Image 1 (tube, rainbow, N blue to C red):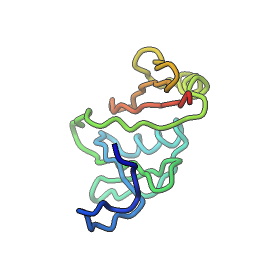
Image 2 (cartoon, rainbow, N blue to C red):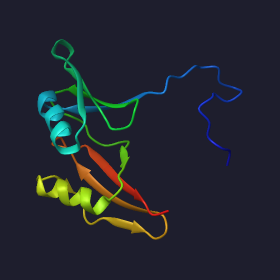
Image 3 (tube, helix red, strand yellow):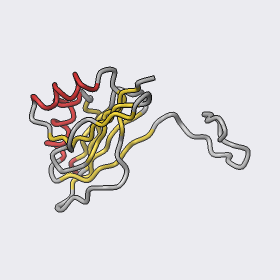
Image 4 (cartoon, one colour):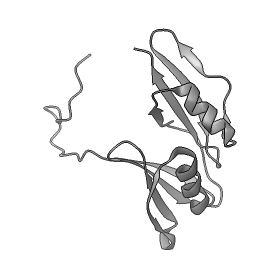
Length: 132
């Protein structure tokens, strides 16, 4: 296994910027933005009603979540996983706000603790706490 680097490998000459937008489908982008703001503390970046698209910025510089408003959202696929310092405290706060989790927090001894939660459209997210 090689060490990861921000520079492209020898076969790649693409000059990537240090940013990524994770795209989700939702029924109501205003509801999605409000949920991510109030539940996770993400910040509203912009809303473009004409194309049914909005974005919120996460706590990670360069990482945002975009929401495409559609009649019947398709959920599944990649699950964004956000690192937290104290997963038990984060989960307790979110559960008190009514956020739905998938089962108990899982612990992989000596490695991580993981908890899967869902946004209002059923998109899965994970919280992870490093145990190293």
